[in-house]
Image 1 (cartoon, one colour):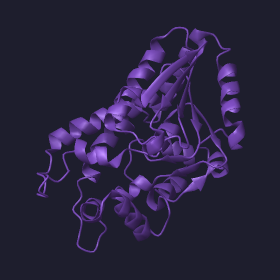
Image 2 (cartoon, rainbow, N blue to C red; image 1 turned 60 degrees about the horizontal axis):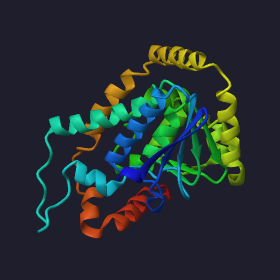
Image 3 (tube, rainbow, N blue to C red; image 1 turned 135 degrees about the vertical axis):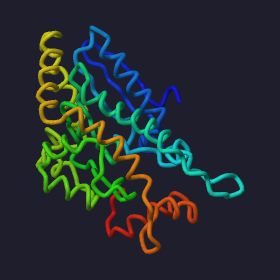
Length: 287
């Protein structure tokens, strides 16, 4: 678990890397907790002026590790197949509040954060990309809010940020359809600052990090603080408090017999087949 997230420093640039390449950097809850711990470590290091957030291997981050989420929420059936007792609302709210505060940590980081995005950027990976200061992606990057197909249907952690970033109609489209889009579309829609050929991605991010690091330390922190105050005037912090309650409610739905229930299908067919059936049900190829 300790090497699932790495922090490396080189002069004024810290590089925060998700290191589960075999899983396309799917995040377990403990991984996200650790990611935030290392973010704070970089914030506290006075030699660091800018932080690069990246994923090792083919993908940036394919979202939450769903098997870990099921276990963490106490929804895994027992060894003999007995149905688990539904977790209390208080335990779910406590877990989801912690998760929401992890996202909020990136939104309110003391220092500028640049996301370096390649391959899959889905669910939690896309949340982080939406929340950080700057983002550069490969033209071949694949983005989607397919996590909304679990029954969330527009219920997310940071709707204020998404509405500001994409506009109301585009936000509803991305969350209700959950369809995949590529790097050039991400740049056109305002998710990323630049979309570049994959072979140029690392060099472009490094150049931007170097340019950002030219600013005085105090200027970067004060500038970020004023930016955060502006976000707060637009509901920047309230969205996370609303988001964790919404997530608890949205993942405790009652499914009718004719509605797709991922958790039920996972129990019947396994995780991989349930994902395929989910996307077949919604008529798309998002993940």
